[in-house]
Image (cartoon, rainbow, N blue to C red):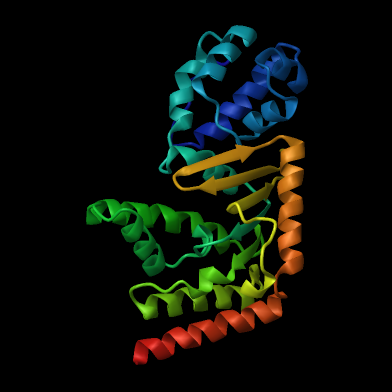
Length: 278
């Protein structure tokens, strides 16, 4: 039985998942068998063990009872659940950090992983008009910390489809848009990311409902995440993930090629630069 409490500073969710695997195997249960007792799928148990899903308190209580772990998971669940992100996005952000491949459709804003500091600041100031500068600084810092994933030379693979509205939506300072779009272009030219633009001319498309993020992992089943205003849902159901994957594939089929997308991004950046000088 696990005895030592987890250190919240040492990847608590991953450690909690590792302890769950040990306790489950000691009890002689497969992931599917434990999932059946919790009324979840075996793949969900695998995601808990891999650290890609959050263990909520009600699951922790049941796991302690089933695996006879003396309250270990309840005691450590709160530490593992700590996050600097909003509740609706916390699980997706932490799964994103462990993903081997991320594919994302952005209908309105540059995705968080590709935002510059100035662009992120404008986004948060628009969304939190009464927030203090200290709070805005905190939000910007957390968003830029996510982008550190791209400091790795090859992983994760990041493939984004940007609606043309993402490029065209004007903000308060054209210089911010110039910097933001050229940042994306530089990552594309360095072959660090793949970006396609879905042009207005594509008309209606399969993802009119909003943003989609698909994540694949080395040691866990894939996940999909859909987001709305202040809400977000993370899915592991294979049929739902497959549907979201098909939706994304249809978007890429209707989007401009990466080469043409790069040309459009740089052209729009030049337009903003002319506006700035004007």
